Image (cartoon, rainbow, N blue to C red; front, top):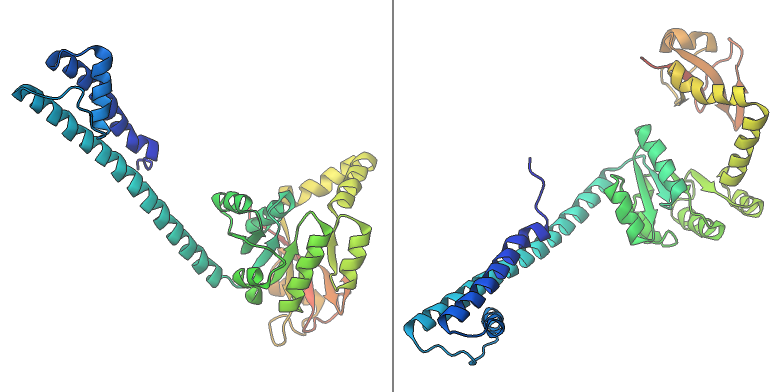
Length: 323
């Protein structure tokens, strides 16, 4: 398939036609009217531009025919330029209309997605990782340029202020599974949190914090999952200095061994309800290993074999992927 022609490529024939007409008209006026070259060029440009000038008025039949030909060709060339520009504007408008409609349909179809507030480096990294895991995402950024860049990168992005309820409504907050507040400013994250809580009080939220003071405020407002990129970066650098081999091992073992860590909620009446830990592997397969059970806000690591799974538990499982 050929790539779509750009506006410049479409205007190129008209530009070449105007240049050729200017040269041919100059030569024609010089030969037919016996005018100087400069005057011939001037008269050609005036004729093509339809401004009109009687400095070289035609007298003979040949002169009338020549001026008429130059005039008609000039009109035709300008008509081509206008048609190309009008077509470009119409196509841009159509693309915008269809683009907005397509994005609206995609947003309406989302269920259980994650809304990411902030399209900066942290927000884009979160979006990349969530997309890699197959989760639906919507990015919100107040900068139209950033939102357009995210859309061009294949991400579903909205231009809007996270402090306004309408922005979250457009992102499908009522149908979302969680919200990530990834703005670089702590105050903005706090205001965005209040906007989310006002619409969806029980929404699961992961927030970014730059200072311990902001972390305390976020926890006071009920946010349990808080990430401080600066602190995490510092801890990782310290581990690389103190325990480089073990850190590299932990970084690569999941990918190289083909392991995948996943969470398995347990609902009343499902296949895992009431099952003993020893029976999980026979039920889910030999490739699955139970690491821990999250129950009543506590993490039970490597629970005894006779522990019974109960509704409301979340199992932390390690699965060996097919390689």
